[in-house]
Length: 382
Ligand SMILES: *[C@@H]1O[C@H](CO)[C@@H](O)[C@H](O)[C@H]1NC(C)=O
Ligand SMILES: *[C@@H]1O[C@H](CO)[C@@H](O)[C@H](O)[C@H]1NC(C)=O
Ligand SMILES: *[C@@H]1O[C@H](CO)[C@@H](O)[C@H](O)[C@H]1NC(C)=O
Ligand SMILES: *[C@@H]1O[C@H](CO)[C@@H](O)[C@H](O)[C@H]1NC(C)=O
Ligand SMILES: *[C@@H]1O[C@H](CO)[C@@H](O)[C@H](O)[C@H]1NC(C)=O
Ligand SMILES: *[C@@H]1O[C@H](CO)[C@@H](O)[C@H](O)[C@H]1NC(C)=O
Ligand SMILES: *[C@@H]1O[C@H](CO)[C@@H](O)[C@H](O)[C@H]1NC(C)=O
Image (tube, rainbow, N blue to C red; front, side, top):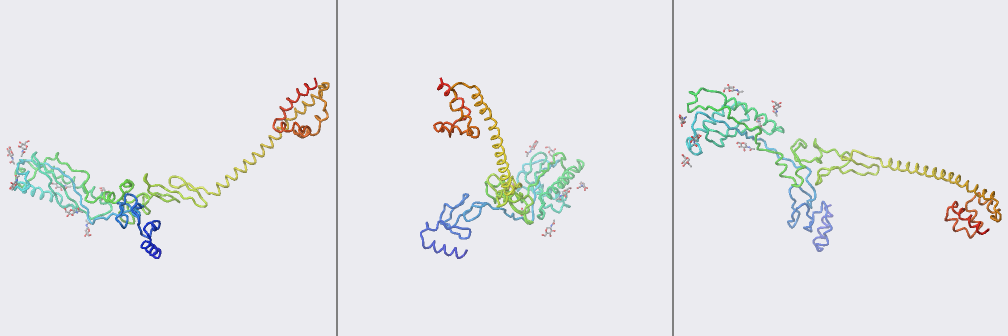
């Protein structure tokens, strides 16, 4: 291949550009024309610059899989709302730089650190907003774990623990006297709200969608490939969810993943996943057998028809005998010929005797011919 490419390079330097337009290949990376870039790729003067999700010298192919870089740790944000009672909301609490705000949030955070202290994944609490109604505290509980493949489940469980802890905290009733102290927090238990689904700092599906071709994004999903997270399709080999095309090959088309069934020298394959196959020799054999059977049927039929046609001719002969019996005077001058051996054995016998009758006899049914013949003869006699 390098030799080939060197040759083509020589050609490219020598010949006008049009002369090498036909010379393109997977290894000879010459792009003499902008028109060759596919799938919305742009031409930068040297090569096709592929859109996300495509590759190849013309950007003609879809990426089969994209490995997703996994972070070492993953954060989760659990959205929580609690209502602190026995306190008056003041204008100061709207100002994040005010002393009142800092004092209150510090007190609140310290308290929360105690609430979640035996949760190793707990990092801190982040206050989002204070609002009037005694004091409504909207905040986030930040959790962090080392990345594991089931981190989403881990965080779901952790969210449940967070919820149990904050509900337990807000329902711990202190009597009204105790709640007056500035270092004490009392809550309205019923007002506590904890979001069921945490917001995760790492979303593999989102990573996947970012790196695949837009028109095909709906066919990509996250799965494990060789022990790593990857963005794959049903056509990606080596995943648990791979589409089994049996003898066929899987191809991602605009309509989705499809099995392309092969036609080998000996078998035909068909079906959604090429699950059906037929031996070509079997098909040819069957066609042969059917043909033979048909041939036999045709032969048998023609023999049968031949026999029944002979039976049909019998009355003809009888008719001529009837005519003989009629004994019409002068009607049959050539009686000897009508009784002739030729007529009995061969329906063209008459034709061979009377050469002027021959053309019409060959084209017509002998049955009709006889009926036409008769009045003629009689008329001639009268
Ligand atoms: C997780 O949270 C910590 C502390 O808030 C932050 O330093 C870190 O960058 C976050 N990690 C990710 C992956 O967002
Ligand atoms: C809150 O305000 C009410 C009246 O507006 C007052 O009676 C009460 O003592 C105040 N509570 C605190 C903790 O300042
Ligand atoms: C908070 O709400 C109470 C009652 O709804 C009201 O009297 C008070 O003025 C409000 N405080 C602020 C700072 O808006
Ligand atoms: C917020 O509080 C700071 C410090 O007390 C003060 O300087 C500032 O003027 C306040 N801002 C508003 C909008 O009240
Ligand atoms: C997270 O990983 C570090 C080393 O990478 C380890 O020291 C630490 O114990 C792990 N934490 C958890 C919660 O498994
Ligand atoms: C989540 O909790 C359930 C039940 O408490 C447990 O069976 C499951 O193993 C936990 N999952 C993880 C990933 O910790
Ligand atoms: C619930 O709260 C009480 C008192 O605040 C505490 O003693 C107890 O351990 C808490 N239970 C849980 C499961 O956190």
